[in-house]
Image 1 (tube, rainbow, N blue to C red):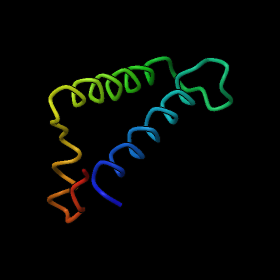
Image 2: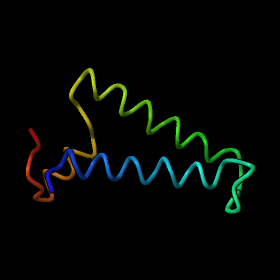
Image 3: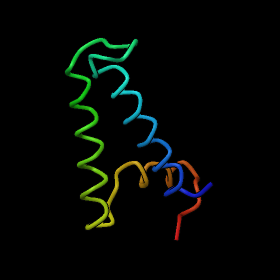
Length: 69
């Protein structure tokens, strides 16, 4: 997998996980504050779409992941 693929899988996992922990109707509900993580990941994806700068992709590249297209 390339770094951009890993980044998207990572972001999707964090979004789904934080929704499970932050939405009151979820059987795994803990606190509404978990929705802040959802917002943070979403905003990071939004800004990286415009700036092409993502801290996770930089970290993954340094750890040896191939760069995406």
